[in-house]
Amino acid sequence: MQASIEQALSDREEWKSIEAQEKSVKLEKQSAFYSRLPSLRFDGNWAYLGTSSNNGIPTYQYQASVNMPLFTSGRIHAEVLKANLEVQKIEQQKLDLRNQIALDVKTALLNLESARNEVEVANLGVKLAKEEVDQARDRFRAGVANNIEVISAQDSLSRANDNQIAALYRFNQARADYARSIGQMERTYAK
Figure 1 (cartoon, rainbow, N blue to C red):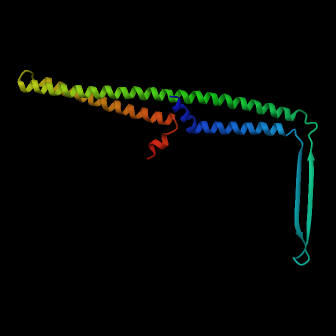
Figure 2 (cartoon, one colour; figure 1 turned 180 degrees about the vertical axis):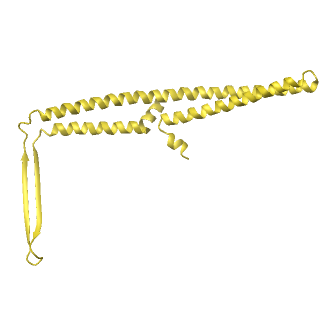
Figure 3 (cartoon, helix red, strand yellow; figure 1 turned 90 degrees about the horizontal axis):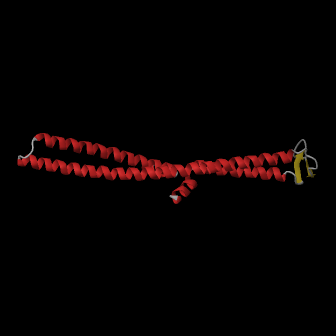
């Protein structure tokens, strides 16, 4: 079960999305924190000026600047606090999503096992109904029973076949639900 949950966490798109959001928010927090550090910037420009290519001259401009934030009125501190809140919010959403995915996988596994057992019971019901039809026919041929018993046994076989079809449908639905819960729906059913 744990392997299925881990597979779901690696394959489901909503998990990948929330991990990307978490990475983005952590980078925003880091950016806000580093904005209080001094920064050094180099700029440059080169151009060729003139009325024609024969009388043009190259022009250059280079510039360097240092930015040292001395007083930011608490803006950087507020940005860091806001980023911390966003990180906490995303972590809580991630925990909630992990729990939801685990619940989806566990529920799908339980439903799959239940549907598998239901198919086994339905198959056994069909087998028993076939034996009942065979026995009713044998009794009818021997003259011990009438035609009503054979018809009743055939009706039981028909109901058993219907139950088997319904059980197989629920089993296939449970398989599809399990594939969706672990993020394998496209790989499993896109063929």
